[in-house]
Length: 273
Image 1 (cartoon, helix red, strand yellow):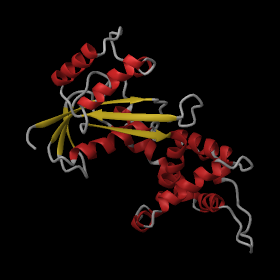
Image 2 (image 1 turned 120 degrees about the vertical axis):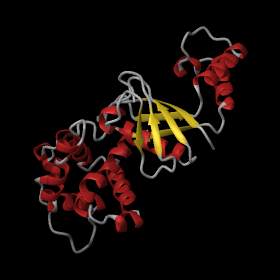
Image 3 (image 1 turned 135 degrees about the vertical axis):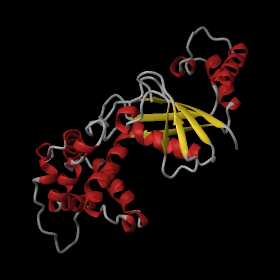
């Protein structure tokens, strides 16, 4: 493939680093490989076939009527194979961050064995399962973890860092998440010191560490970068991925490790990606 592949991105359900927002359980991120001129033609064709009275197409309104649903289906059929959508359960994502910011600081010099054995998935799974046990103190643990990651003040998470666990029982009946808590308490000094660096080293001071926009954008860049061509990427003007990633709102070239596309020209409007 030659030339530059134009990519447009957008998101829905964004609540920033608050992944426990009661009104927004899911976060969606989408990207499409279509230029403006072609996108305009596709939309006009779909509108002609399925007329709707709305200046800007909104999924919530379109999905409420049969004509609107047909218009959506026409659009999706026209861009088949040229778009991707990522959907995140925010609670599950927050559980996944447990491994990233509790275990990885301890094994950061060589975490390959843990990833090869899917230990990161094990930790996320049992953290999430523990959340479904209404008799556990899971809600306390996860809420404190989120507060700690936003402030990086260990005093915000005493359940993790100031909560010695009782000795293991001979029966071995301890819930796996209890072992995670034991690990967090035992290595608290290393964990706290490593995570504190984010406030000094990240462009946003680490305030958006838990935000899913940057992680989603990175996944999409790697997907489209695998085509082996240069990418011109444009994000929604309200995107929160810029402050966390350090991407400038003006056009620039940015090397993306792991994406075979190499240097990726990234463009955005003021306040955009």
